[in-house]
Amino acid sequence: MAAPVPYVALNDGHKVPGVGLGCWMGAPGAAEETYGMVKNALKAGYRHFDTAFGYGNEEAVGRAIRESGIPRSEIFVTTKLTNKHHGSVAEGFELSFKNLNIEYIDLYLMHWPNANDDKDEPIPYGVSPTFVETWKDMEGLLGTGKVRSLGVSNFSIKTLEELLPHAKIVPVTNQVECNVYYPQHKLQEYCKSKGITITAYGPLGQYKNTFLADPEVIKVAEKNKATPAQIAISWLVQRGVIPVPKSSNPERLKQNITLVTLSKEDFDTIDNLHKQPGKHRSLDGYTNRVPGHLAAWTMEQMGWKVGKDGYIEGDD
Image (cartoon, rainbow, N blue to C red; front, top):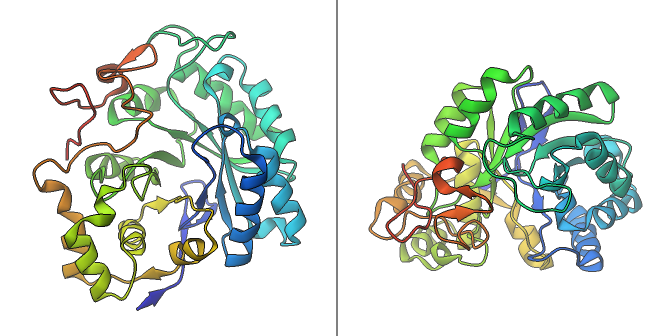
C-alpha cells in the first residue's frame, strides 16, 4: 500500500518532510550534476534537501531551488558547519548562507564533533575548539534570523552526553549513518529520550549497499511490489527516522519517496536482519577508511564500538 511522505515535528516546533534528498555526490563539487539532480527532485515532489559546505555544491542546490518557482516556505534545506570552521562559526555559517542564497537556512548542523585548525589539519580530542565550545557559538546563530533550527551530525551517545549538560538549546536532530545493517536502535532510543530526532545518511548503504541484495529484503520487496530500496527507506520512516537517500536517477528519485506501509511481520523481518552473523556493521567508507581512528580521534573518543579489525560495529 502506498504511503505519503509524513512530516516530522522537531523539538523546537518546526516540521520537516520525513524523507529528503542527500546531496553528497561522492566527492566535493559536481555542481552541475547536483543542480540537475535537485531540479529533477523538486519536480518529483521532494521538499527536503540535505547539503553541506564540505560538499562543495551549496550554490547549485540554492540555484535549483530559486529557479523552481516553488514557494520558499514549502522547502526545507539543511546544511552543515565544516570542521575547519569550528573556531569561526559565524564566518562558516555566512559562507553557506551566501552560497545557498535562499533567504534563510532551515537547519544548520555541526557536521562532525571533530575540529580542524585554520590549515584544515585535524585537532586532537579535547583540544580547543571543542564541540561544546562550537555548539555554544552555533546557539548564537539563532538570534540572526538567518537560521531556524540547529542540530548535530555523527554524534554518539558518548559525545551527546558530553555536549547536552552545556547546551542551552537541545539539538533538533542527530544525523548519522543508519540503515538495515546498521540500525542505531540504542542511539535512537537515547536521542528520543532527549527529544532529538535521528536523520539517516547512507540509508541505502552508500557504496556498499549489500543489504539491497539480501534475500530477505528482496522477499519483503517482492511481497510489497516494491524495490529493496523502497523497503529500506519505508522501514526507516516507520521507525520515525528521517532518511536522506541520494540518487540522480529520475526513476529512482520517484521510487525513493514512494513509500510503502510495512506489516508488522515485514517490519520485524527488516528490523532484525542486523542480528544475523556478519551483518551488523557500518557500511560507510569515510568513517572506516583508517581502522581504529577518525582524523586525530580514536573510535573510542568518538564513542563508537569497534571490532577486532578496528572497523566500526553496531552495538545494538
